[in-house]
Image 1 (cartoon, one colour):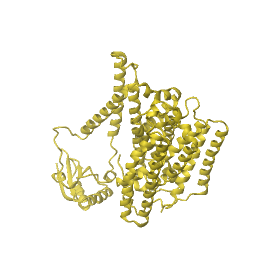
Image 2 (image 1 turned 60 degrees about the vertical axis):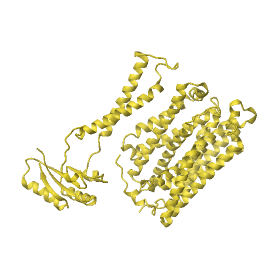
Image 3 (image 1 turned 30 degrees about the horizontal axis):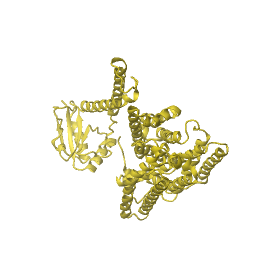
Image 4 (image 1 turned 90 degrees about the horizontal axis):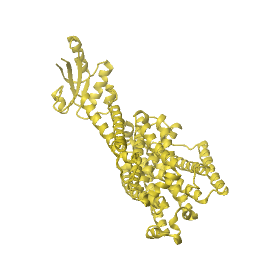
Length: 392
Length: 172
């Protein structure tokens, strides 16, 4: 039988620590080399939010499949649970960033003395105390539900009692409903309020669709990493096929929402709305088009045939491309407003800090994977997961 | 005239067991008619993958090209109209129609291709191999050549009986 429990080898943890060190070094170097503080703060926000979103989607995928009582997902449930352990880490990092002055560097609406007429009307929502209250509410909900879902899943595996599965279902349902609300409002708080004068009613869903695609991509990448290391032999082509379908579908969903937002603003041509895309066309035109190619055209064409979704040959490169693509998508959401066209760029600070965050994320996920057996033997859908077979 | 032998099973698992036995003996099964989809039956029968998806892809690509090309021609050459000061050739405004026609072409082409390959059309005479398969039986159909000898037919019948099939009949 295959390896039941994940062991974090010395080599692997060294690699993640080296990645974290690279991140910390570039952070320090860019501070002393005179890179603008706003650019550093925006970078930290970008990466914290990106990996927080990936952690949330890991838990979201577990929750959705638990409610739907889907069998096949049982085989990969541990990965999603492990991804969710990054949520508290991201919460702590985000809190440190905001409290240590990042809030004033990134968000214009925090400068109380310089508010214009439009921002004054929004003070009821965009003010610092309420901002921090919402921040705490989000993270209390997310962290506690992630904790309860992981705990019940572990107990279900230990004792095999169905009552834990019923509990798991209730917590999952609560999480799905609350994430539907909190993902939208947190996207307003942390991303849309960077350009506080502008608003879009579709924004929250747009960000959520981006989260879905990147979270699925990271789930696929971690799965292939584990398979490479000799774990997860029980996950076969059929399970990988379904994950590939998710990546394909969510990429199309993202493109659909991207276009829905863009076309309405383009057609109506109201200056207060078009300024958002005008800025991105003018100073970030490469990223504007590369974003569409990486996140829609590549996965759409590459994952269209059945065979490309059933193995690592095409699915893994596409997942990596989508992972980079949605990082760029988030980049063009944050940077034009927080840093501006003249000072922003993709250079050493961006790449180094992202490597640091990726190392931290992998370290947290791998550590969490060691704590529970990779194969949930006593899960009620365990056998069904093995028997699974999919036609299209 | 095509001749064929029919036999039925009462249960899904008996059917799968029987099919594997027949396959091991080298009996060529033409078709199996079941009241509901049976898991893994396509692997046992070695049914090749459907080519319907290729029809969908080609028709969808044609639909996209037709819709985009037609709009581009109409709005730039044939009848240029000024909509809200937009340029005559403006891609974002073509996308919704292009998307719709892609879906429409692909959907219609796949349905029509499905009907043609399965010889289904409104008013087509239904081909019922055996009345019993219209209810709850799992029917196995083995086609026989017109000029095959009685001996080979009885061999097939024997193989079916050995595999646990019931109600074996030769039909023309």
